[in-house]
Length: 219
Image (cartoon, rainbow, N blue to C red; front, side):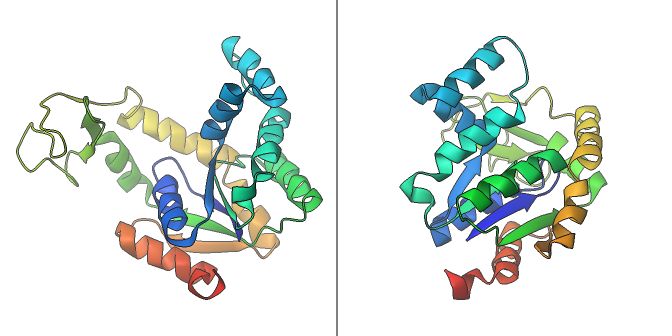
């Protein structure tokens, strides 16, 4: 099974992709991770991406598609792949359609994680992590059992990402709705779109995604 996870930053796409990987043997394909792996491996498209990134430029769609093409050709993708963070635009969606068609890899479904914007701002701006081990916390949803002490390693120093603030999150949401939300209509017209409540508890979201995809019966 090949699928795409859609949703704004912080919607939980990565979390749900990880759950599907663990439970069903699918492969999570994150654009950022694939680019880093290609650069490290020194592939042709990896070298192209490395040159662009070192120059401070944005990696072109053609390079990203080349990285994806190399990755899905690997044996571990035979069982199925989850595209996390790609495509972001209609042009990228069309390019991915062409790539999958050439490899005879049908796109089974596109899952949209529906979220509440105000809740998303609160969810993301409240995030922080242990500076030593990276364990994640939240101002209201997940605080350490002992105030100021990491549950995982006992460290007492925490940090926040500079871009995890209300103003930046709102800008990221606006960018998503401007560039990526048209994909919802694109995949709806193709009969591929499934919608899931992205504000439910994580386990409930996972169950809803599995139900929408019929993964229990199909994998």
